[in-house]
Amino acid sequence: GAGVSQSPSNKVTEKGKDVELRCDPISGHTALYWYRQSLGQGLEFLIYFQGNSAPDKSGLPSDRFSAERTGGSVSTLTIQRTQQEDSAVYLCASSKQGGTNEKLFFGSGTQLSVL
Amino acid sequence: QQQVKQSPQSLIVQKGGISIINCAYENTAFDYFPWYQQFPGKGPALLIAIRPDVSEKKEGRFTISFNKSAKQFSLHIMDSQPGDSATYFCAAKPSGSARQLTFGSGTQLTVLP
Image (tube, rainbow over all chains, first blue to last red; front, side, top):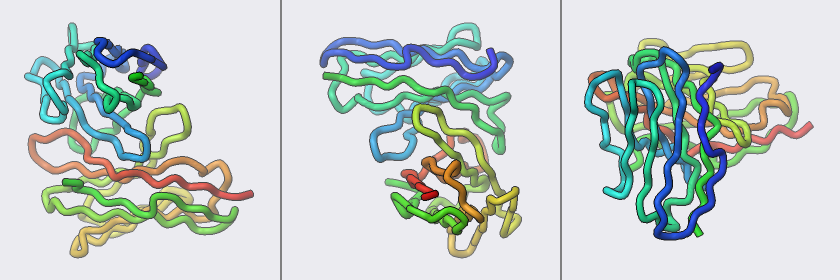
């Protein structure tokens, strides 16, 4: 595709339910990032995938959060037993190789609302 | 601990004026400083970036000024236009193995017509 695609664009769920958020990076991009954007806050790093290397999970806020990247392409962010404080926009970004000065291309995000 | 502090939180400027957004950082290992622009309902997009070996970088109406000794950098938007109305994020990335950008909290810019 032409850009980073995220689905769904909006997700409303009940507290305690599990949710899965999907990210399709730009074709050929080996680096993939998940960020969380809470209202009035900056972008909070969650997890980083680079090729076949072990992911950098240092930003995941709790063990309820996990992410996978299958075949070096599509990624899924899973939040188990959702809480109201999980409500935020979840942004996915990709870059060619994850280099120091590389430009990140962001998707439009998934707006998650936990009732 | 927030590693990149951004101000102001919001900014209103008249068309044709200069918009100035400031950021300060703590981690001296940071060596790449981009600015991202985000329109409502969209993801952030890279606007301009600077490395600490230069004190200023200009691209069109957008200029980054960098003060390494003060650990501060700023974005200047000259001749601000209503189409510049967006949220602006500064960010920083350290050298070495860490790959993730650390973002500031954002500045919501409104340029009045």
